[in-house]
Image (tube, rainbow, N blue to C red; front, side, top):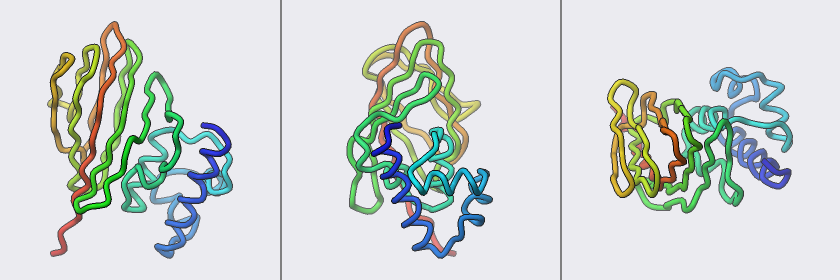
Length: 175
């Protein structure tokens, strides 16, 4: 991630954390990262993984896109690149992403916020995706919708896979 993108992420993290009245220690512990790493991220330094950004978004109860908007460069690691295309402003909130996975990649995704659902449409290649233990293999042009508030995965075969991905964030219902 370039310096400008890291600075944007850091500003968003700090603003959201402070708005929710959380200390660095509280958010770091809840997200399972070191307080020093969170502090560096808020200062626009470090090299966060996609999982770290997702865990922080879940703990802050915001969509992933809220942390990464308006970062224009793809975020990536271990053969996976993700770019936020658009972030909805309605309720429920819907974020749209472009995602590309290298050949022979297995990407295990952590649960999103409660009630979140993903819909993906494969543009090219072959892709196995869905909740762990209930995946489906897709060919170009096929779509899949699944609950994303549990562990899920994306697995490619011998070729690149490119897909459009939308995440619908349903608000938690109060009891």
